[in-house]
Length: 149
Image (tube, helix red, strand yellow):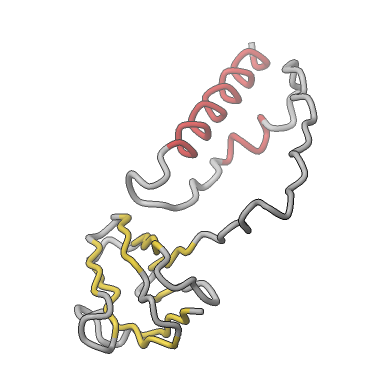
C-alpha cells in the first residue's frame, strides 16, 4: 500500500511541476518549494522510458545570432538586471514581490514600466546605447543601472 501512495505522490508532483513550467509569463514567477514527502518519493524507481537523445542542427553563418533574453526580476525590493540589453530589445519585468514597483529611467521619457505585485510586463529598451539609471518611483531606495549595448 505504501508503494501505491508513493507512486501517486510522484505522479502528483510531476503533474504540478509540468503545470508550473507552462505558466511562465501569465503570473508571478518563482520556484515551488519541495515538500518533505517529495524527497522520499523521488527515490522510488521509475518505470517510464527515458526520452531519446536528440541533437540540434548546426547553425550556419547565414543565420542571425541568437539574442539573449532580457529579463529584469524584482525580488525583495531589489532589481536583478542582466549585464546588458540590446538597443530596442523587449525587456521582460517579473515582479515577484506582492507590492507594485516601477522600472523608471532617470531620464524622463526613456522608459517607465509599472508592474503590479506578482505581475509580469514588458517594455522596450532605448535605441541609444548607454547606461540608464533606474529607480522605482514607489520605493526610491530601489535603484540600479540598465546597460544598453
